[in-house]
Image (cartoon, rainbow, N blue to C red; front, side, top):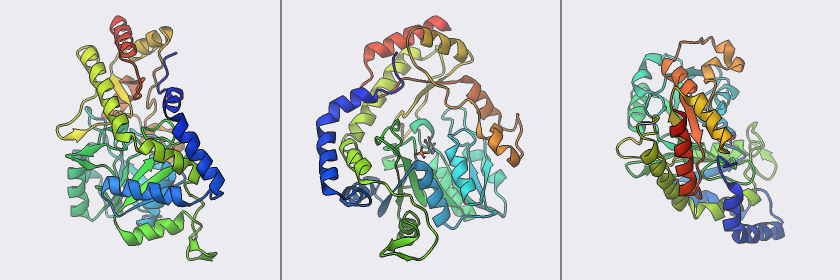
Length: 363
Ligand SMILES: Cc1ncc(COP(=O)(O)O)c(C=O)c1O
């Protein structure tokens, strides 16, 4: 079966370096918040041209701790997209705030900035744009709206490590940028992990406390916090992969270009807006023939996944928010038509050609 992502192949390529790194960390006997985490934080802050990066236990925690540290909580409203992974809304709800959904653009599947202002009320405190599948949301427009209405911006960059707009990396546009190192992410660990990119030193300090039981150390607790630390083993593995992230993203873009060349006019291929740099965390086509195509791919030994079959506003767990079918027509059409195809830096050209042939044969 052609996998969605071939982590075995990737590991085989970096095995020597990873095992050396693991040995170094294991022999150091420092397993939590040690020098590897500090080195990774420094490198990731520099990469994003921000003053700080703070390693945490997951992308979900990166969002939760950022929203919390930016002073958003009980009764506040936070604008976001219904076309995302569930964690985006969960993180907002953990703080006591309420997610308020805004429909998406049909082309990039990112939040439709032209619809945001209509949803702003006196309780709105923040916007959480999600750079879905690796294509940046329209951060210029979001920054303007946020400035006008005095809102915070927390970027959900879980799928977009290395994405940029006119050479400025996502994670550096908002008040905080939240990344996931879940193993299948384009920069993935071998377990859970996440990081927050941030410029405000006071908020960064607050997040550092929140991730460590409200303490800066020495068993002095200034606030009620969480246990949400990135461990040394994951940080070490991420340092090995971080060195290669630009090359990995470049390769993803080459695979995406080949898919698009072969599938244009057959299905709706992902687009890249002018000046935007898409890292193709997912290569997601759209077509009304989605289910037939998925069956044919499966029969010919190719994996494919529907990200996401149920939009957040129709998730059972969020029923209490009171949304109903028909509220977000672009999102609801997307969930019927999207299909993500295998995508990883080592994906063979011949495999892409075979996948494209199968799709052509199915429509
Ligand atoms: C858009 C989005 N937000 C948040 C998350 C949560 O990240 P994690 O799984 O590291 O908690 C993910 C991925 O899982 C994601 O895709």
